Picture 1 (cartoon, rainbow, N blue to C red):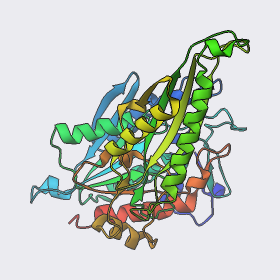
Picture 2: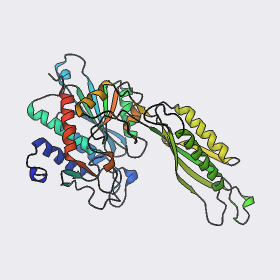
Picture 3: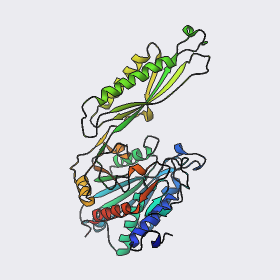
Picture 4: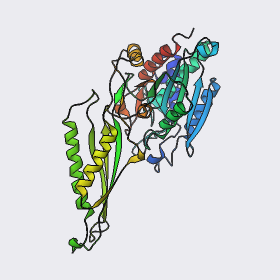
Amino acid sequence: MISDSEIDAADSPSRLRRAELLSELVGINSVNPDHGGPKSGPGGEGDLARWIGEKADRLGAEVTLDEVLDNRPNVYCHFAGAHSKRGDGPPRTVCVDVHLDTVGVEHMPDDPFDGRLADNRVYGRGSVDTKATFAVVLEMLESLQSEGRELGPDLLLVGSISEEMGGFPGAFALQERFADRDLPVDQIVVAEPTMCAPVYGHKGGLGLEVMVRGAAAHSSKPHLGQNAIVAASRVVAALQAEHERLVAGDAPTEVGTGTLAVTSIEGGLARNIIPDGCRIFGDRRVAPGEDVETMFERLRSLVADAAAPLEVEVAMSYDRVMPGFYRPADSELVSELARLSGNPADIASYGTNALAYNDLDAEIVIFGPGSIDQAHKAVEWVDVDQLDIAGSIYREWLTEHAR
């Protein structure tokens, strides 16, 4: 239990409760299994999803667990707003999507799950990215219940799996839920640390997986083989040239141009064998407005030409390209959150679950307390003042027109 002396003597009960909830959330290990290690164990989001579901159930939500992957469920918590309860017209539905998983903890010097509070900060893995939003929204719902107040719109609070790595399966499961069941959603807030500024655009992505096939031979007679690493070096140079072409061009939006970076290369059998294979990974960031089919075909042709005469296999990670996310900076949702926060709308350099929702007919914004600069670090924290700001914004926004 966090005492008021650990923050400030003048702190409100809501401020203390947000910090307490966040500390408890940080204490639930939800490391993405792809980031697991000795310190975290296998990780997984199951325990956190069930904790959120139980808390929401006690607050009156209709709760559903959706087993997207083994022991890795999305959790959907539906809170009825005033208009739904009264039946006086079609309700507005707001979805707040908070990813459940965190990055790994192996590089953290302190206990990553202690959720300690010091210097008006809550520390630990997930404190800023992005369990803070869970704490803010749950505290708001608790306060409204104790005051006998209601939400204005219906609220779907979602905990989604695998945002940090794995191709956004949790977000795509939610997208399919909206599409397949014809569930209306008017506005979606994707929770990320934005310093409570509404973010309306960022780049999408394509993972380019390249396998160059050669033929092995004794290294004393290289002419008898086909050196896959040599061919792969030509591919790397071609991909770098493509990056330089991209950034020299005109940006279709303020989000910027596409980029391309080779981030890994692996090949070779032994020091005295001509390598018969070499694997390359390229990280292609997709600017809003780029034609993704044309882009992939260009990359496929570029790689094949560079590797020739060797054979090459080209594929995309998770069998999909994610186009850039972009919504008008003056949309109703972005404008409302800018007004409530006092922060101008902004763009982001990182990717989010918003990429999965591009095809939905809904207003979408990225928004949340704390700074992305604190995310993924060896010491992660969020300022309690940011929790307060976000709490005030959510409360005013989601209780508007409740009566």
